Length: 374
Image (cartoon, rainbow, N blue to C red; front, side):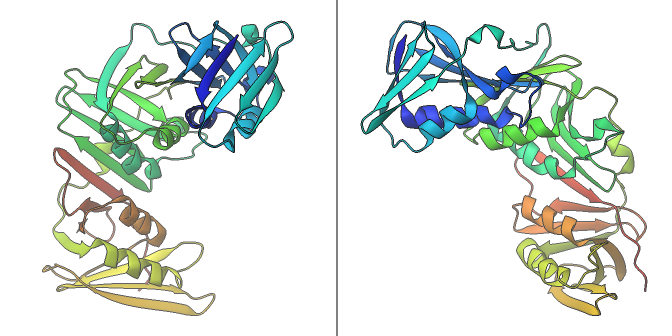
């Protein structure tokens, strides 16, 4: 069996597939890629860690025969990575399983393995189907991922909740200290359902998908899901359980409302963070007429910082404490010119919105307050 393929295309697809590989596997064969030369002129590359299985494809330039084999992922990645763009001819001796690659400036020889022991993916059958664009999915993941938890007891918190309504899709995530609710009105699925996307899978999708408005299909049951694009298919397990009522903790009456320049706010937070208490990261925000005062201190190291920002605010004065690092993260995630900070009182959660919402979307980020000692 012999085939010819673009070196850069092959390297790109191998790198994509490697995102699901685990550092330690219970089955040695999972340290390998499954390579399948198909009769339709496609090369399929499969990688798995037993919980997740990613299949991606690359078109072949030429082929003689078809079949499949396994090869150690690390070895083939390192063999291909530094080859500049050019056709590579790869030949498999099906008797000895010797794999030979030839390119314009040299060649390499590896040992392949029989593919019969490679586990087949668990495919979703008779599930619900959600169709959306990659732009919507990536945006929802980017907005929600930072609020997911690492909780060994409440496993449902360790992922992004897809709350599917007939006329909208809601991405939600929370770890108890922060919460994200991202509503996409422009997507109207036409049915109701829900599932929890694991954080690890969300991280993989964030790294391999592009914002090219391509169509994405998500098929899911109560415990499994498959996400498919034109050249990538990802099978994985879902987090099972009942997600908490995220709407219950979002305050609906917030009389204190300030419009703040996002970049100026982020810069001020970074300056003040240097002097914040290293264990708590507490920053105190005080809103006065068209003025925001940020202050942080660390009594143990005798450090203190204060910064003033002009903002749009016309209500009574109010002071509240938040995690400085979480506010910085929110500023980095949002891409609007301004942010809107809404407060009810110093003991209730604060809400952050983008000053300019994306068309057909609404984004709410919630932070639990921290105690401020006057």
